[in-house]
Amino acid sequence: MTSAHPNDPGGPPAAAPRTYAVGDVHGRLDLLLRAIQAISDHVGEGSFRVVFLGDYVDRGPDSRGVIEFLMALQRRWTVVCLKGNHEELMLQAITDPANRRLERWLEYGGKETLMSYGLGRNDDLAAKLPQAHLRWMAGLPSTTGDKHRIFVHAGLLPGTPAHRQKEETLLWIRERFLEALPGEFEAHVVHGHTPVWEGKPDPAEPELLEHRTNIDTGAFATGVLTVAVFDAEVPGGPIEVLKVGREQTARFVPDSPEPTAPPEAPRRRRGLARWLSRRAGEP
Image 1 (cartoon, rainbow, N blue to C red):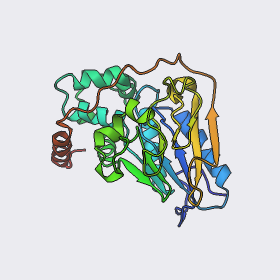
Image 2: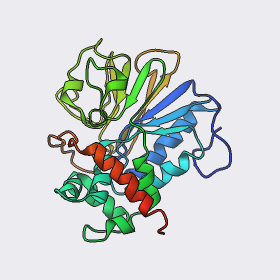
Image 3: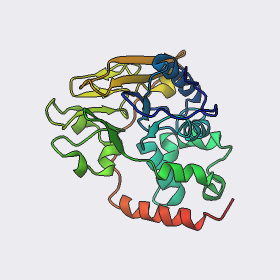
């Protein structure tokens, strides 16, 4: 059986007829470890890949541990880690903290992320946060897919081809996507980002619809992390859902309305590349 520990010897599987999609982790390393073990037990000797839907940092207690584990896991398994809006918020706050970007990130759970690194808001974050972690987050893709599905953090703009979607849409969209009807997308959409809304009143339960699958189950507060299992040859939603969890760890408070990314986001991403290259020689 494939080991669940990313530092064990062995190579990744050669093919991926089965995909395990993992919902928003938000600093819950304890649940992430249980999810990886559940995947390992479930797949047995079969080949597979794992797709993480973003939001690895903020709110939960061990964002640093989550990132370190995922970076190591990618060296062991076939793993795609998508970018979430919380990774984007963190990058913006660190590389360009003006215009309340740092304050905004801290309000959305960045305070807990800094604590996991042993840092506070008054530290020189650009110097003290691991450069490898920032580079990893900056390089995360926004989407992946198979012949039947699109995997994305937040969702897609209805009626718009996948190749024309803007990154801020992929990371931030809510109502226009959630209220869309079957037939408004090119393929079944697998996403996270929204653990509770009027169509999904229980944050600890996934949302399984004809045209999309929402597996954000609010792990940081509900204590439930969800894994949806997809067969590459079977269209539509998951063939099975795995849930790992412990007791609820905090009162679940829904997000306040989140604005879309500001229009200058592309300029900041180019600035991030320059900023990382300038610091490449530093420890």
